[in-house]
Length: 287
Image (cartoon, rainbow, N blue to C red; front, side, top):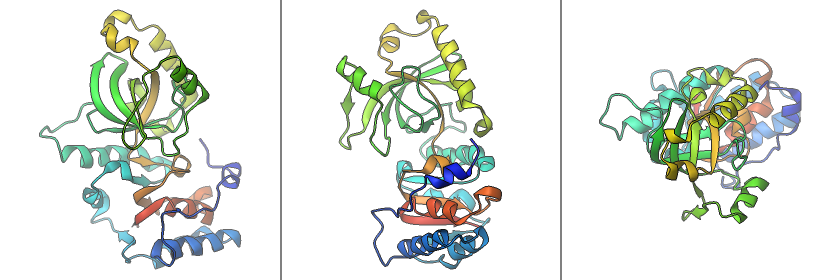
């Protein structure tokens, strides 16, 4: 997905509603808002960000620390790293190791583990779940060559679900909610895009077509019937620890890391405003 002027026009200049006024994060957002409204340039915006670091809410991260700062994160669901398209795939793998290997005795991770965070990159086969929905794995049920079956919690941040979801709900689809009103579900995850180490470059319409083809050709005998019959949707995902600015829109996290290594059409104040205002409590600025 290319970063275009059309995309820029739909960004609302809204600071996190959980950021206190007269705080470093609020002050930084206001400076970037003003710079955006006065058609400032990206160089000035990045300088504004750097001039705001080393406060209790805005912290600079140099190459000597890099992703290690995320070791301090207690809940990976409340942290995100925002970077350019060329960095996101590798960042997802590094951050996944940081979060999951801290609790693992093994030297390698399976394609999906309990606690893993994944993000849907296109609408599901049944369109119960949509592009941008986020999930945390709670149980791994079964695996075939192309799919892995999991129980998960959908933690979509805007709490909006598709019309087909509500139709399925009325037809008796499993609809158990946790204490935070997040939906518990069973999904089949299409493996090829998840395990592709450069998945940000994939054409997701084509991926969805391939997912349809392989799902409908999957022998039902390859998976226990109880698991197969309880699948709410079939989805294509990437890991959910790092995102581009496009996929961070509408979301808010306690801890946000922002890479300043973004150039070209994205290097404008509106990009940087959107990135830093995803943070509710702490912003790491990667220089």
